[in-house]
Length: 336
Image 1 (cartoon, rainbow, N blue to C red):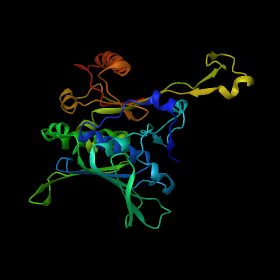
Image 2: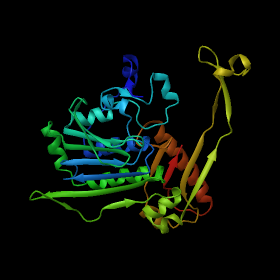
Image 3: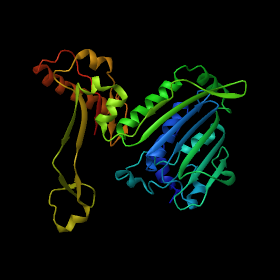
Image 4: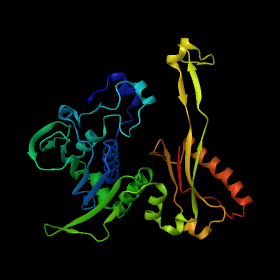
């Protein structure tokens, strides 16, 4: 159930969600669709996303009782207090994504239907996230979000976005990132442009079918040539039982008195790495790095993630060179 976060939790988790480009909108909406247990996510950009951005999924839809608050700021169903962050398993949890999108568009429309709804409902939202209008319509189960005229109320930001020549490619790269983490989901991207009031389709619409596993996804995304030169590796630590005392400190005596405070921690690392005898040309030609923590894409440009990736590369480089590898390693995919 969607409900407002308390003021203390808002202050502790809020980072001030800011939409600065088309890619930000797509990322937020795609993550919402993944959280909704979708197996198909379709993205459509009209006018490089500045005319409209549409993200359609076949997920569980939004329950009718949740719809009045679905785009209100700091309203979420993912957590109720700050401590819930320790167990949250979804991408979204701050209650800011839809509200932030509403704030920078001329209008936002949401079409949603659950499996128990007789028909779908189309909601039109204002810039504060409140519902202006609703009407019934035919649609399959799932949710579709349509963001119309992005940055129409922020001329400078819109002008900057209009100068971008790589929006479509950047959006495709976002979808590739999530397709590797969620190979069972079908992703598609359709780009159109407006000419003399008619919508025409660009060539090269992109589709990534649902696949059985990560390696199958790599074959489809990057080709069998690269897939034949990499290997999927899994490492898992032994389960550790850690008991905590009332003040939150570690307690080594995991007896029945603190059993309720005992948690089990298992660290699993999954990686797609080049084979020791891989062809360097093939690896570096396709050399992209994708890093995830709990299936969430993260940047490797700073912080602990940068140090971790450097450490993994250093250790693997040494092992690979002992087996005849020449040059520095390229991590294709790493998931913690």
